[in-house]
Image (cartoon, rainbow, N blue to C red; front, side, top):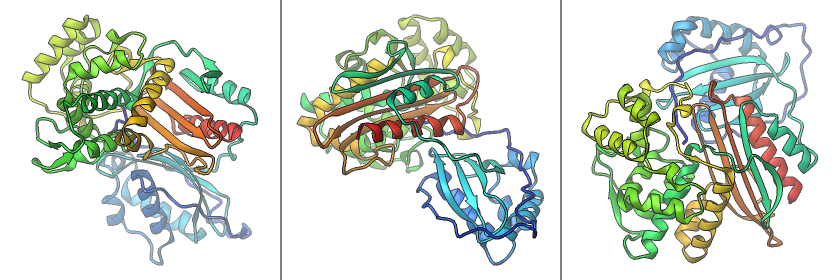
Length: 443
């Protein structure tokens, strides 16, 4: 699941001695890249605006942007002085490369003097900077030249990696594809399947309104968590938000609309090798309550219990107040306690195939799956790109089913997880870079 975590350990700001040195020769005009309209992209744009402004930045500007926990480690005065004295003399500064996810990114920056540097930015759900690291630019990432190299480099990623790549059903890459792994928001494919089945059976309509209430409101990612109580959203729109921007509140509205049992039935119908592993099927709100709600007794019961015990946990959870805020979140992996949704890479590939069949019959399913391709793939080569990714502490997952102009279908599933550490921005960059290489190689 795409969990937005409020990072409480501030990154140290490194002084770039080269940037302000008058002895460094000016460099040629660098080629600027556009920053995406994500939380991290917008914040990076703001930082660059501050660095390039005519006037020096002020302490007040930085105090309004830096998380209090960050300022406890590096004060706004220190940040202001560093930016004004060590960075701004190199302006104009432009972004020449961007690698990242919704709330964290690494941006390579070049100026008229000094060496390029990497700016790592992490923001929380309230768009406050929780991590800001300036360091010498890493060497440019080298693209993989063959499918075998993609496989080797995927296997070399930190932690545990499960990968499956199929072309028209024929395996190109298989690395522990039948080993269970945490999914992050990839689990939402099963919710979409349940919704599609309910619509096909006449139990639900894409035009049916769903109402945001305080007792269904979840945490980010998404948009609907900020919507006032009483806001309505059509089922079709909620489905698009669930898949395209991984809206957690939209997800829970849809689970409520079809019923938990219908989602559990969809898990089995869509080919999961062990449907019992996702019974009961928790909502994102329930997931957050177990993660950060202070219910240690229920967490123990969930971790150690069977299906009925876990259903009892969810029943008890419903009787307790939901007192979880974004500020309560941290980046400690807990999926080893069973606090996640689990499947194999092959399960996810089968889920994509099941949804592709439903998309053929229902344009709303296709619209939800293809609104966000996940990567800047060549739309002239890959005409239909279904994507669902996800992340949570210690989890990074990506899944694609794309159709080539010649009719070939490429299915890519990569599930990376680490029981001890959050997934780094470098790992994210390498994983998604390798998937991009793979599509280029098979294009």
